[in-house]
Amino acid sequence: MINNFLIINCTGNNNSIGLKFNNNFFTEKLQNNIESNNLLVSNIIGFTKKHKVKLSNKYSIIVNMGPGSYSSIRISLSVAKGIQIVHGSKLYGYKNYQLSELKLENIENLIKNKQLENKMVNPIYQ
Image (cartoon, rainbow, N blue to C red; front, side, top):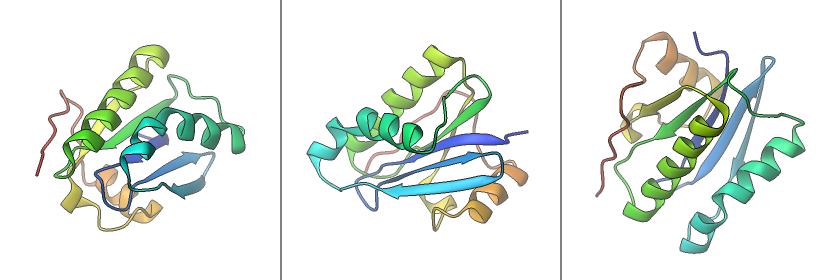
């Protein structure tokens, strides 16, 4: 069961990240431009520090696989994979149409309905 997680929703439209820990859920909107792609790791580090969270193998990483911008999806998948390798986190993916809004109840529905993919994450580009 996925309890605590970092969600990366970067497809070039309404980019945002979210963090659930100890039954708290926080989100942060990111700018939608090529420069924000370059800052994704910095944004995640700042976001986790702000909420006093240290990512570990107790956190799952959930990443949007698209469809969307090629560069946004590749960068977010690379960052998610890096976090998985460094911390031993589990990596899950979802498709853009499966999550209408980055809200905790919507994400928990994906988890409860077993709609997240934990096999190799395969991006979908526009």
